Image: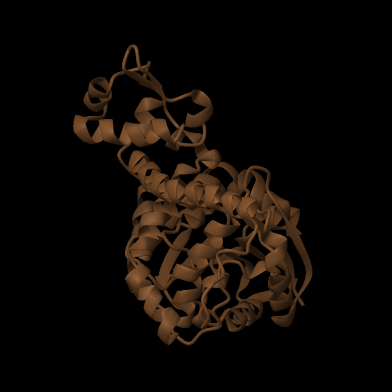
Length: 360
């Protein structure tokens, strides 16, 4: 490999890229601090406090003042929190807290910052995958499902029954009358439990490979007093129950599957002759150049490299990855035997597409 020629290049372009690199480095580190601010509740407390000193903030949050003060230094220099040098008081503008707190609901972006440290935990092992191939199994990501459940709950709580399911009026009508529903890769079962509560005439089954997730799902169902939901530990490849379900849902799970094509075919066979399939998956194109202007594309390609693609490749799977894209999704659905495929979006949900289709 030859040496680079550093004497013959566009200096202005180089300076512009150097400036971007500083932004990337600062942004990466700030993401860690945003994650800490979210986990500790600092943003939640700051959002309702009057301008306060670090001592007052520490007292309100019951956190160590020295750590709070240093964290505030990152927030101030990152232009997230305002600081008055005369009063030594800090303030989180409402325009910022609208995207940083648990009360933000679907607009909560701080929750995503937690993925940075989570992915960092497996960085060295992913480097080895670059060198040797293969991937890392789900067991390498002990907190991933918990984080994903927290992230998706903000969408499900505000939009599942009021908007997402209403994308297809036929699904809503059937749920109200009473049908059998299966949710693939249900995780901690929050979506299933919300549907179970909203549609008492229907019966819901959630399946996932995670025993921890299924246990959490059952616990939530019990707390909600639901009798029309059940959960089972099962690989999506083994769900085939010929013509047994009227509606099947899959929320952000198909691209993670080891054999997604086979899973989609099993879903198709498990639907009755008039069955409907609702698949939520990442809003992206299968062509990288069409994702350049997407707001979270670099973050999603990173998560794909370090998790979604890797967990599939760990079992010699297809390794579609997070950014498999709309075009490939439609191709796979068609190959699996679905027809009348529609791709829709929900206002406020910048992450997902919603694929609506029928059994052929």
